[in-house]
Length: 251
Ligand code: 1GP
Image (cartoon, rainbow, N blue to C red; front, side, top):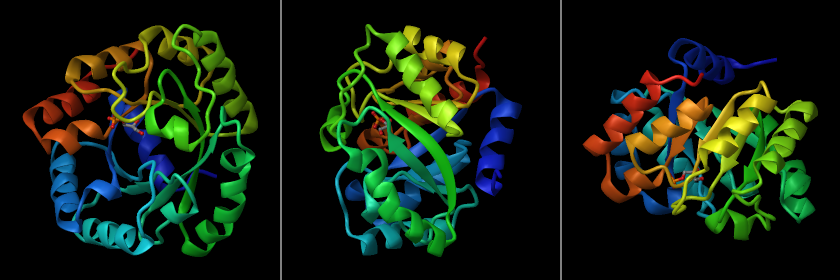
């Protein structure tokens, strides 16, 4: 059963063709700077705020950031946890994700078993997600002990995504790694899009509107960016990127 955040994401994809999510890494912000970014992102019409990073922060810091944002923005806040410590009861939802190409069972199902009762107790909406690390994969690859899918093997990304769909996961994420020098290539995005019919999230290394447009035209339903705002704040380029995602649809 889809909850309110999932319905919100799906209806916005339906209406706009593709949507943008703004990722905030709790390690790199204070509650005040996170709020400033989130308010700007909402003004620019990002669809939701994601909160998470590859390395750990204290849950108290995570709670503070989310509470501060929650009081001042209306768009949903979705957790993007790297581990059990990435859960905060103050968020609206959580990507309940399995790193499908991890070599370590902890990231496939172990952390999830530990986290599931906390998610339930917190009343968070769980959004089932298959997470796939491709290309260089950055810090997420190392932390998640992934065997990343080479950019030249789009068919491998497709079968991982199909596995996510057959497992009943309701979203699939192609992750190039935060700050990747090469975003996920169009040929890999289109191969996955042709194979599955669950919404396709693409992120990692998307730094400008042109790259975002390429990903959307290739088949991405959801674009995630983090670094562009970490490096330059809520810049005009960021605004242009968010607007471009919402104006473009894939074929
Ligand atoms: C990382 O896909 C996200 O998990 C976003 O990547 O920080 O490179 O935008 P960037």
